[in-house]
Amino acid sequence: MLRRRLLDAGLRAEQLLESPGDLDTYDHDGFGGSRHRPGLVVLCENAGDVVSSVKACRDASVPWVARGAGTGLSGGATPSDGGVVVALAGCREVAEVALADGLVKVGPGVTNLEVSALVGAEGLFYAPDPSSQVVCTIGGNVAENSGGAHCLKYGFTTHHVLGIDVVTPDGDLVTLGGDVVDAPGYDLRGVFVGSEGTLGAAVGITVRVVAKPQAVRTVLADFPSVTAAGRAVAGIIGAQIVPACLEMMDRLAMEACEAATGAGLPLDAAAVLIIECDGYPVCVEEDIAAIEAICRDVGARSFRVAADATERATIWRARKAAFAAMGRLAPDYIVQDGVVPRGALPAVLARIEELAAGAGLRVANVFHAGDGNLHPLVLFDAADAGADEAAEALSEEIVTCCLELGGSITGEHGVGTDKACLMPLMFSEDDLAVMDRVRRAFDQTGLCNPDKVFPTPRLCGESPGPYRRHPIEQAGVAERW
Image 1 (tube, rainbow, N blue to C red):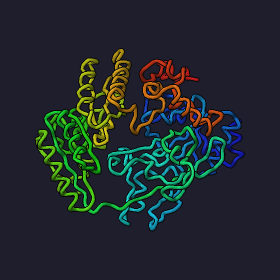
Image 2 (image 1 turned 180 degrees about the vertical axis):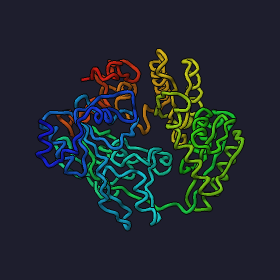
Image 3 (image 1 turned 30 degrees about the vertical axis):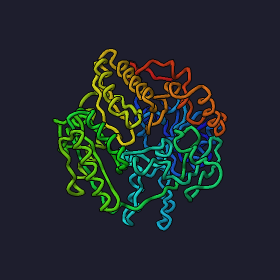
Image 4 (image 1 turned 90 degrees about the horizontal axis):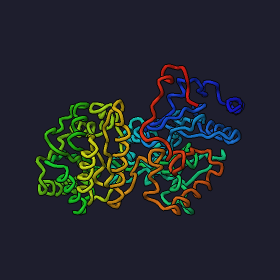
């Protein structure tokens, strides 16, 4: 019936995926701990396709989830069993490039890096830069309020999105915000950004682009201990210096990244900071000099300034390869996304080391140190009995530690299904009830990306650890329903 509704609405048969192999491709996003096979995938090509898909789901009372490139790390784009995936990666229209106003309007399937490419020749760029920026889409960035290395200075997606064309859960096409920095009225644009696909589907996004800085200097500083690197971060921020980015990698993370990229990372160091300053040349040089003094004062072993754009790109290639490179250390890992006040970095890193030792697991740390956004990677082998449960428990202990130090359960990866059960650790029942009322104001039927963000008995009663297919499923004898 649903398929017939979509065909009658004008979608082509080749836009509807129903074979088991195709459906398995869409049963999870970058978070592999939760897998649910959809009943149908709709390959949308424009806003009209999205409207038709959402209305068909509404009329048939079928749950649906909007999906971009599927690079999210919290399960936000995981479908419901038998539900519909409204795939937006094919919605790649560039509707407007208004250089005089510093605005670009694109479809949700345009990738993050492509926005900068649209305006790069004019000396402009789009500032938010997730590590997956080559493949992650603007629509997904809006859903998760993505950040990236340069969010320390330039801010997150929400600071760069002015207007959003949204298909509501009722199938209406509305515009939130506009083409000005501060549109009058309630900030529904701000409510939608970071809502993890629970309030509708973005089908057109107006972003602001900014001028490329006149000067950029990138530094690789290495330290004899993770604690010393953490003190350097606190010292830099305490000195009122705001680098464009301030990233940290420990020895284990460097080991994986160096094996993957050959970037020349100092593997005998306990930790490195990647520090980038940009702006007016004289200001950049002053900041670099001040940062070097701070790093030397806390025991930095070396302070290497990239000689040119090639060396700078090499350093960043190593940093952005971090998550993918972890496969060189272990067959499985859980990436966390906790946040702590920057002054608590030395304490939380020491605590992570203690917790990892107690669990008998290795943890690689690579993260946005400048804003206290941790990405500890808990390494394990799911083939070892009990390893996945132990890794999950350690991962949750790390998040709990972040909260105890005054932080948050997530900085940029979102809650999704991964952290829904942790929400009560940070928010009271009244807090969650208010959030749910906002959600229901947009989606009274609960069909739009259900079972995300908010804890439910079903989610919190599931066995810990990633889903594993039963041998009879692997043999093709049986299927999950």
